[in-house]
Length: 497
Image 1 (tube, rainbow, N blue to C red):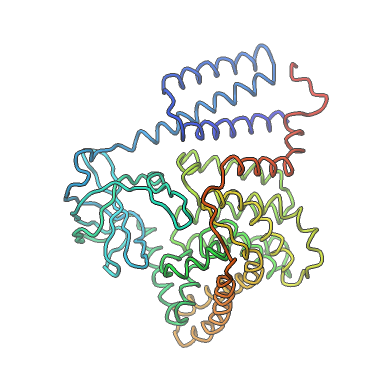
Image 2: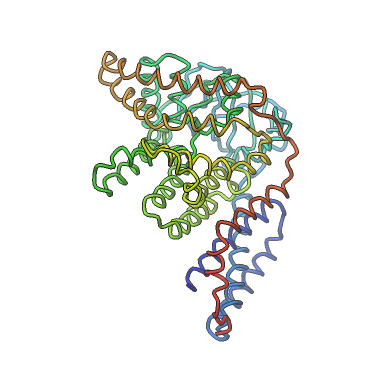
């Protein structure tokens, strides 16, 4: 039990340290002084005084200081080297370090360049359809600018500056002159993964017409940028945007359905196929950081659902989250994808089993009851966060998801089959593509029908932070109060010993 207390003191101390430093600048020398004093007190209370309460307190304080320091180290690496070059025309050379992001009207390139020994990332916008690939060495020139925050359609201010900053991007350039100097740079593995992904989507588009092929790309690879603004808004209004995003919630549902499809096999084989489904998803997405993060969250939720050991998996979930924050402290506050994946995974692990008893009237055939309980759990749990962060409330999200989600795993399986068969023969891929088309068409139809209701969604631009915190405090109390008591307030335990 003492090991558990130390574990939670370390994890939450570090997280709260990063959280504080995300909003408030803390003197580095004072932080190191607090860390040093805490280490001495930890040694004192562990070797001499033997007071467990004070030992846990100063372990928390020590790792709180470590969290503050870690954020400072990463933050200090983002050097503003273009102080005099902003809003001026510059000419630079660099390497495209991520897959080009195709939008509705343009393409985004993440370019890494080196200025006076400092690594700098610039987001370069070019015309859609130009031939750029990951690993290309390019020469580019144009007006350099800094990103600016903007107001969304719901009236919320989007923190675009820190959204890019979390990935080390401090500057942008729009529609300058860009020329390829050489090709074949970057990671060999990523280059081949991205190339395979492009070919795979191409085979799908041959066998499935648009816009159904775009939906398939979103389902199996998280490709949603090709949708026009009107279609994307329909997904948002119906609360189904998660099915075309790289979310741990979505991947978890798919993996569980894969396990159910192979339920006739020994349990370990079904579990193995579920993990394999997640691995395929991550690989097929090109190994993007969002996909890796979603995959990790999904594996943890899958383990919990398959074994029923929510306590052990809960600790693993915390450890995974802390690991991601250690790697990049900015994700804790500025990465909505990380936050949503974590919150939804908590819902799948802890809330779904408690809500399933209220859906005993729903058939268990094809796993419908499980899908509905998971859908309700995830939606209820992420709703306060969505209201505060995005200001959008969908009143049709639950029925829309219930009518769409049971068909998503089958659609994805057919999508993978269509793509892989397409590499062998277009003729053989077409029949599978037609089956996929009917399911995709149905899903788009459901989303379109629900989005047409005048009350489908409405904006709440000023949902207060204090209310969101209060709601989550209530959730934590209802779900974890007993566990917290077992860990920190065990009856009869003498902390002075």
